[in-house]
Length: 408
Image (cartoon, rainbow, N blue to C red):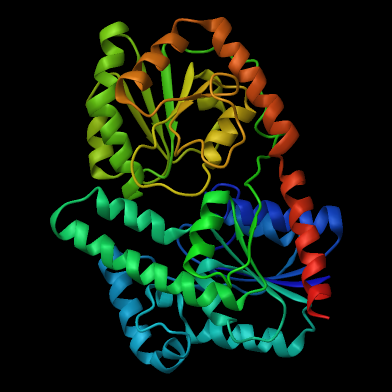
């Protein structure tokens, strides 16, 4: 098929929000020989090697640069664009569209020219780019991954004062966007059944398809590296508000309980752009804040236990949990962190939602190498069977082929 992919950023195997798109494009091209054209924004977050990775598997139009700034600056830009594009927003039931931050006249023109010049059989759009093609009469898919409005609702309910009001407003804006835009697409791709239920309950005309995230099982494979005794690792985007909140909760409420049993435990916080709060934790000699690293695997390989303490405000599916499991690591997480993964507690990973249980289960794993090995081996087998990118792409390819047929 001749496919047009629209992305808010250059797809990258190193960025959690575009990592799935990168692997899906690569596998659709290599395994199924689809002819893919990519139109994308590019920002300072993009890496030079990402351009080469993408060019190897698709035709990439010259990307349009977008400047990331402070959240308030982004929201002001979105408000300005919403006013300028008010007729279109009103047409789709949107008075203010937070994602109008991504509106750019140059991008609008580039997409229109591509649609005139090519006979695309299907359009695949990330959530942020959906508004560009909402009125285009071509079979199309939107990929929001999860119900983003639910994330904002959770953050709002766990906040106080102005922050609570701020995130509640963003919840309302995102819920309006999801409700009115996704129904215009032939399929809406999400990663868990819960996200499907949340979106379809807001609007029964939204047609969700669940395709779980995958893992590059060859890249993230068990390594013959000695574990560092009593070491914990948590991998995330360390600037994301929800990640910061969960890390601070773990450090203040759970880490002290672990240290009571084992005062030598070390905590590694691995991920890009650590916030001020996270950087301050490096003053603790037991905590290492790495910032961005080119390769996560050495850090995962040497850790004793991989943790994913997602207690507050999270939706979708956690790639970093899948990657740790793929490397045969024992993982301790919460129900939120394991969402969408068909894993059995105490067989493939450990799930604990109470502070005392989370600490207790980590201590038990630190003290029991045989238990860690059993969990890790079971986790690896589960990932190979159900969560490789080959499995995810096979499901997506069926969707791609069926949508045009359903329109006939």
